Length: 237
Ligand code: PXP
Image 1 (cartoon, rainbow, N blue to C red):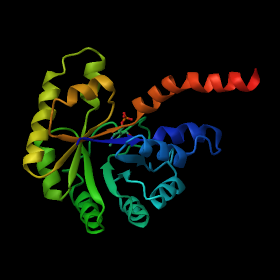
Image 2 (cartoon, rainbow, N blue to C red; image 1 turned 30 degrees about the horizontal axis):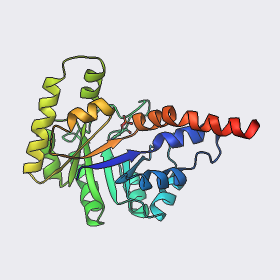
Image 3 (spheres, rainbow, N blue to C red; image 1 turned 90 degrees about the horizontal axis):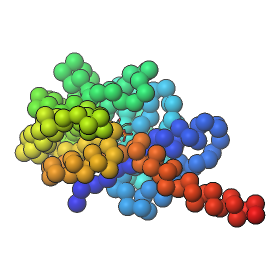
């Protein structure tokens, strides 16, 4: 069965806008889990702009299946080892980016990434590498010892949303997914996905997990807002 991981970073973005506790990360995590999500993704960014250390700790203590996204550095590795999320996905991180802009540069950061992956694998934390879809990146991921890769779907999502030709990017993702599966690497996909892009990617049977955040949170506001307004109308009538 194909899995769905839900990124709840932007629940924290909304909460942090008021610096108080609503909406509660733990409450939303429970709803997400009870709604059938296979895992809950949180990106502990170096600037802590959304998820905070205490959120990660609370979520891991609740024994939810947490997929911790993090930059590839030793300090983050130590935080992961301390909190023991079930999964870790290493991502590149730039201070001023709005969201994760591209995949990891595995060649340039090979030794550091291998060190972190080896350590996390030894601690029974499943490791994944967020990469741009290329055969070379899959081969390097295999050499590094990662159990999974998450293919960055930002480019294909953008092409589809802008009604541009996406067939070349689709083929690239398809080839990488097949090659990864043949090499015993689990293939995940994420970034920029909505209903349309996800539906399209499901034609690639080798993709076994999708990680989706922004669209789900945005769509939830769209679907949920009328219910909340009705609740208030009842209160003030
Ligand atoms: N996967 C990874 C590795 C990411 O960094 C992100 C963005 O935080 C996502 C998936 C989710 O992307 P989106 O919020 O665009 O659905």
